[in-house]
Each structure stands twice: as C-alpha cells, then as structure tokens.
Length: 207
Image 1 (cartoon, helix red, strand yellow):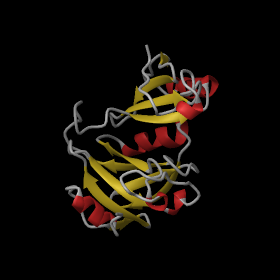
Image 2 (tube, helix red, strand yellow; image 1 turned 45 degrees about the vertical axis):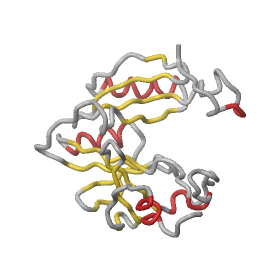
Image 3 (tube, rainbow, N blue to C red; image 1 turned 45 degrees about the horizontal axis):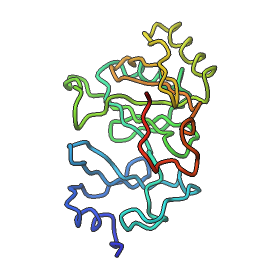
Image 4 (cartoon, one colour; image 1 turned 90 degrees about the vertical axis):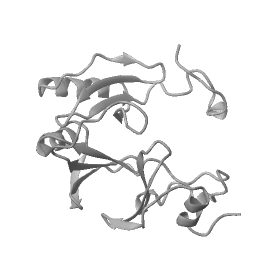
C-alpha cells in the first residue's frame, strides 16, 4: 500500500524530518539518514521529463526520486573565490540567492545545481560516518578533463595527477573554502565489465 504523502511515508519508517519549506521556488523536505547526514527531498520541475523507477519500497514511478538535485557547500573561506571555481572552471552560472545561500546552475536536469553557503568560524569537516568525503563533477572524456585540470593549475590550484578508477579517471583538488572536488570522466563507463542488461545485478569492484 502506498502512503498518501511523503510525510506519512517517512513517519511509518521512523525517519525524522522537518516541515516542508519553499526555497528557490522549490518545495523542500529536510530529513536525516541513520548516520545523521542532513538530506533533502526536493520537488522541482527540472526533472519533469525524467522517468522514475517503479517498484522500490512501494513508491510509484511518478513519485520516485529521479537523482541528485544539488549539493550545498558549506564554505569557511572567501565565497567569491569558491564561486569563481564553479563559474570559471566547472561550467556553472550564477543564479538566485535565498536563505543565506547563493545558487549556481547548469542546464543538466539532474545534478546541475550547487548552493554555496558561508559558514565562517564553523568547525572543519572530519572523515567518517555522517559526512561527505568529496563532491564529484563529470566531464565527458580525458580531453575535457585535461582542459579543466590545466586551467586549474594555471589559476594556482593544487591538482592531483590523473587517478585510474577503471570505470572512469579522476583528478582532485580543494576549492578555496576547503571542500574536496573531483573531476571525473564519463568514459570508459560501467560497461567495461558487464553488459547494459546486467548493470546493477551483481557487485563489481575495480581490481
């Protein structure tokens, strides 16, 4: 039986959440996972054309999660410098500002939003449960990644050498506020060791 509202669905599963709010003209429902990670469900027209998956936990396809809407960066540093990385190197453009956060967007319907929130004086993040280790941004191939890496180096950022991850290749750097960014290629993709029809049916790990 599908429950009538997201609130009822979460309550039945013992998930704590806040009252829905409106931010950037989108409806947002804030909650925490079992490790204390703050998460949000966002209702947005950006994914109107994206189909959902049927059958997960009794949620019909039209109400299913479509993917990652955004990430919020808590930046203890010069916000303009963080924003310059997003707009100057990662293809984002400046959007609106609301509730102390500035939004940056691309045309991608999923994963095309970054919110930057200044948190001066807040303690620095530490690795472990309930934290995000890094934020990954995608590029199509090695050539596009090389363009981004070379531009970051020219701009004075410390960027790693290319790391081979079997399914993709990655470089890493810290933006001026201290958050670790990854720039990863789409290629060669997850079909290097299984067919499209088999994707997700078995555990696959790099050597």
